[in-house]
Amino acid sequence: MKKIATINILTFIKTRGEVTAALLAEELGMTKEGARLNLLKLAEDGVVQSSMKSERVGRPITYYTLTDKGRAYLPDAHAQVTVDLLDSVKKLLGDNALDLLIGDREQQTYQRYEKALTEADTLEQRLDTLARIRTQEGYMAEWTKEDDAYFLIENHCPICAAAKACQGFCRAELTNFRALIGKEFKVDRIKHIVADDQRCVYRITR
Image (cartoon, rainbow, N blue to C red; front, side):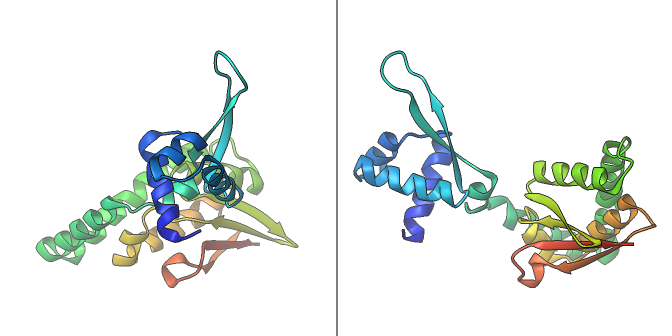
């Protein structure tokens, strides 16, 4: 399937909220079977998800919606606006003002996460909570354990454009993770999307 075809399908689903194979076929001028096969392939890739809905008569109909992964494929017009704003802050007010902006965001984020972690007593409970919050914020986060090491994994970065324009965002996130996970643990970022890795990975050891 060509990339342009994928973008067209995802854009249509985004616009409609949910689609059926019949609706997609009509919109893109393909057969219903062709549309269904495209949607099944996207579902296998985790880009869309399906659900069944019963109509008044006949068999239930399959509807498809975008997943977080699917939404990440679509152009983000806000990304360039954010980068432009950061450039303007730096140009008009200087590096110190930009550092203050990032520091304020870091503090607010820390306070919000710390509150959510109030009842998380163990490392695994903390990772569960952090992964859930970060996923809600668009990072598609999860965690795994290998031998004596834990790994917090972020498969997507919704602020990637801003992070590439200003590394302070990434430093602030690492600082927050270290404080939130606890001084008894060592937290290192071993993979970084900004450094052209496929995902950000934080290794946590004692």
